[in-house]
Length: 238
Image 1 (cartoon, rainbow, N blue to C red):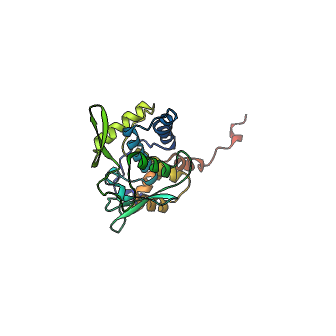
Image 2 (image 1 turned 120 degrees about the vertical axis):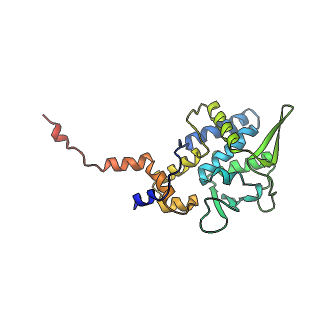
Image 3 (image 1 turned 180 degrees about the vertical axis):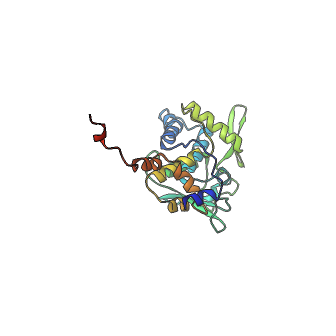
């Protein structure tokens, strides 16, 4: 069955997974270190951080994220709900949703969404402006950074700026816009969740994509190695 699933569709391009360690470093450097000095987070860095957090928890594509506006984000107290009017990952119906949980503390994705909304005057929910994008463009006007909420950042510029931010923070692994998504999926599978659950959360149509991530996890491959019959230690006794 696994061979059949893997053969029906070309696998996603491989990338380096970025997980909770890289995300924690980014949150500390972008939010908490400036705040300890009485400063606000950098606009360019905070914009990149929100994208990374969303990738890690929801496993969405860049093309999906780039369509998100303040109207598509709803603060439901114990979680953030993202609504996509259309999506390549959409399952069997028109429109879909993804969720980020409230886990509490300074690394909580919901708290970080709220900080982002306060800092940039986003009004989350159905009453929000459908042209105020989360991945907005930032213009430098005579040394002053100004957001242009009605325009979205390109894929190439998003990736380039994220690479620059990661390098500045001492994270020198090769990065792509799927790195935090891969890290989130891998961490989820390695804690023992099923392929079916992974498929549902990732909004995938079948098991091919979660199977690809499963086969690439260290814990999954290690389980196979551990089940190989061991050589008896008595065979080495002289």
